[in-house]
Image 1 (cartoon, rainbow, N blue to C red):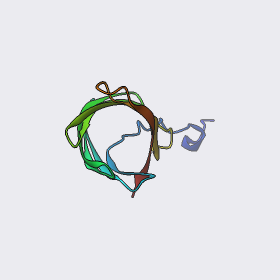
Image 2: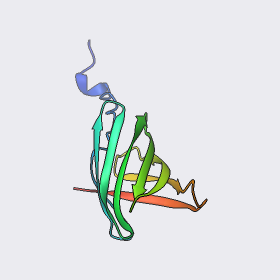
Image 3: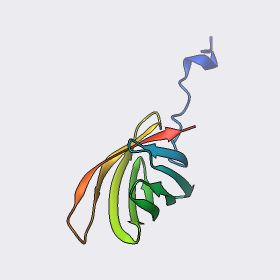
Length: 105
């Protein structure tokens, strides 16, 4: 006999980073996605954030500014799509650190 459909796992959903996010400091951000292109905007505790970038698999590469100061970030989207974690750095100052964003429903 044929296996019931339930025996086949559903195809893995390609989780999108699109939607609302917040950081541990209380900053809130919106990520929009169109194909492999993403746009990110929001307000961090340090000021207005605007950025653009690309999505490849679960990896986000974002170039953004906070109050006009340029930064770059490399983030990984968790398998459940609820967390973005990675690092940021400032090409100008060499400052760098960790990023952890959690999805806001």
